[in-house]
Image 1 (cartoon, rainbow, N blue to C red):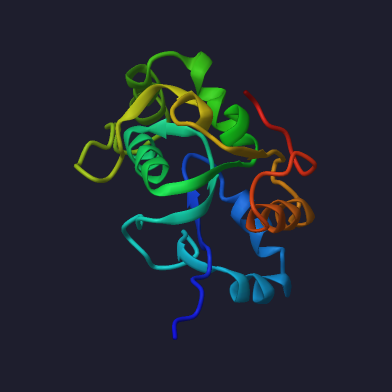
Image 2: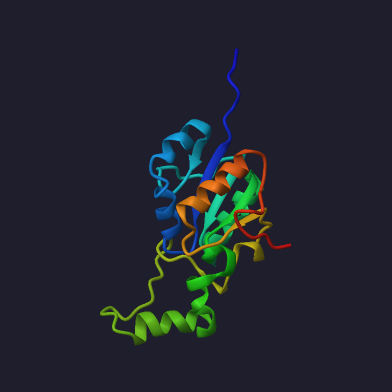
Length: 181
């Protein structure tokens, strides 16, 4: 006899400050209840390197700011049933998108690393150190289909709990957030 499979939950951190994940941790004791309801299969809060297949729900924090963010966003969309734009950076670009009016990434990197007070005066370029910046920071829904949105900077623990409860009960519930499109 096999037990029913628990929903597989992932959380992802793209271009942002990790505040949404800190708010996730503010779920405190409810995290024990959540652990009984789901299998957490990928998160920056655990040591998993590869995004797995067959994820039921993924919370995606942060905007899409560089090539690594874009590749992970595309990978998680292909492997996840419900993608949730998690927090204002994912929903609107928010603080991460403040670099957009600064111009081309190469000129911005020049100003920060060479013209600025950096003591080495070079743009970091070793492979794997600094991913290539995209020309513009984008909201998650600009690069992949998003099923639901949990706004907030960061979303409160109560809002995250309501969203997860609703999602685990069958799908997005528009009472806990907004939905575009």
